[in-house]
Length: 424
Image (cartoon, rainbow, N blue to C red; front, side, top):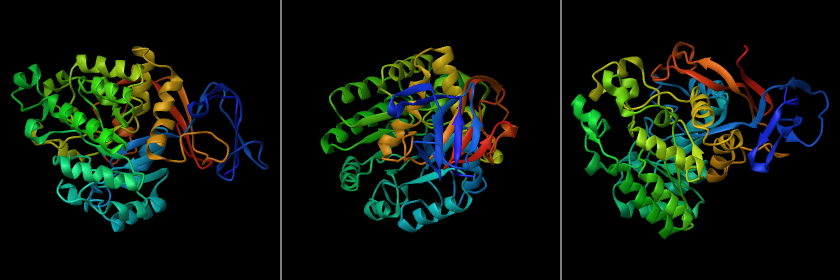
């Protein structure tokens, strides 16, 4: 059934400045201006009707790493988190650095995915930071951005040429900000806790230098660079100042960097190990301020599944990364709205819909007539407890297990079809 009438809900559509109780009409998988014939009616009383949520930073692991996650399981997890669109990263096996691999991912997503999947392509071949990948050919294959996520291009000349080349195809560049010479073998934030635990530290300046580099390159090339998973409070004023000058620079915050600090590693639990690392309460306060004043206008999960046997080793040997899709909205809603009272619900929804859609030039993140009918029904006051064993992901590497959250997606609709329902 692609014809649907959603009634009685509080419709929040930041792209169009809408926040009111009204009906939403769906006809043949797109939003319509009037009631479609033969439509099913869905009562959304007491719920928020929002554009389908978008996560622009997700690791679906295929091809080549299906023991961690598959496109089928990853998109099922996305649907269970209220996300109708995900953007997958290129650090797969083989690397998504060619039109053939991009084509394989898109075909697999069309066959097995339950939500929309958009691809990024690598900046450099093999993510090695040396030779540019065929950006134009990948653009033709359908990528929406380029990134070496999981790695960072260290050669500034290579990065400059990548930004200039991407500009020719209207592609933003997404960057994992990490200066290797400063970070070295760091596995957690460089500070008191890294000293206490005897673990190599990952200093803030290792991120801040690359954020500064990216601001300068975005200004020089007049083309967008998006700084992924910001973790240093010192990065926020850099982005704020550059944006004030009209530089096309942006950044994202992930749920875990708002919810936890480096002190959580006291028990050497590898589920608190991610790259970039958890930092301090001082950094969290800077993130909240940056979100509140609009410096940071995009949120994302960095969903990074790993098999149990990979994480269940010594902390310094365990891979970086955690799950994020199913807990993302709940964490952001709980912390930013209920606990910190930093922003309202409309702002939060905008940071998960129209803002990432605008950066990536997607025809999503809105309830506008004619747009694809992707909808997320939300209950911002629903209290629930995270249970990793109920996850749709193949992996279980989450630090949120057992955490009580307030706010959750309850139904996910893609192109007019209900693909996940909390009640079922």
